[in-house]
Length: 158
Length: 93
Length: 162
Image (cartoon, rainbow over the protein chains, first blue to last red):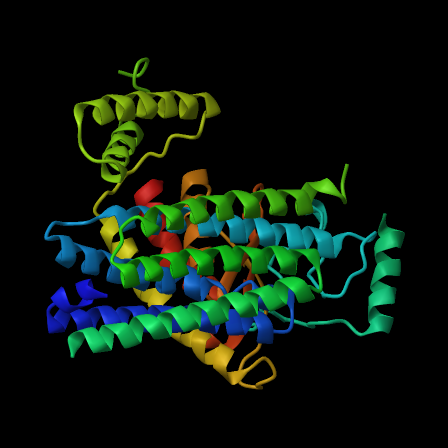
């Protein structure tokens, strides 16, 4: 730990703040993953760590090694760019996969999702716009009776 | 004094990230559905990557960065494959 | 230029990245150049729709807006997560929107922005009529999602791409 003493005090304080905030955001994301009730809600939780959690820790690491080595260290930008480019892809694909699975009649449903309407039947106005900004509220986990009814309706449509 | 602050902050960050890993791991084991597990696995990859960065800062060693980069790449590929499988693999076709 | 180096910007960025990751030397420069040219050639064979930028000057503005919005929604989502899932102060749900954007690159950028922002998740997009399904963690944080997306991101993206 000798290298920590070489840093000037202002840098130590800045790095400490960045690291603590970043790690706290990440652990909050983990907490959300455990606490939230439905998959679509949980999809939002890790984004905390993905966006500013990563950014702050990467910044702290860059600042520290730049000061320690006496030259500009920009290795970590690579991680930042990589995370920025890849997380939307993974989350998007997961969201679509989940929606597809929830609409599939052969799998048991346990979450209510808006059904897919074929193009010709689609109303002119988007669904879930009541004028007060409240979309279709999550029904969350469906009660058993409702789930069975939905499954029957799905099967009848096929 | 300044190194004390930094040592405390880095220790806190390590504990917090390990806690985040444990929470994501709980979600991965608990499920209830496959997409929850994949999401939790992706989060675990990300937390492990951040943990590597912090450990690199504690040791003053730049080479942990390479490990973090490898974890990030592996996590991306693993999650995309799993999501693709969920979308195509077992339901349709 | 188009035959030998199909994507000059991409290849240049790749060479730069290669030199950042390794130390600078003539051998690394040569190896990085070969890899970058191969990658550019591979991308050319995927036939991506080429982005046409109309207004470069709006890009920093968009990046600034996005960085600020992500920070704001980070704080909002952190609050929601601390309050817990059963708190009556927020409701999550699906919102359906109508997009005016048609350029595939612009839509991809919008998807990246909305997914990277905590609190909104891009779930489904119907290519032919521009209908978008979003999942929002806190529906009450904004009054009208349609106007929000249209005014804040869509108009800027249309300026840049179309």
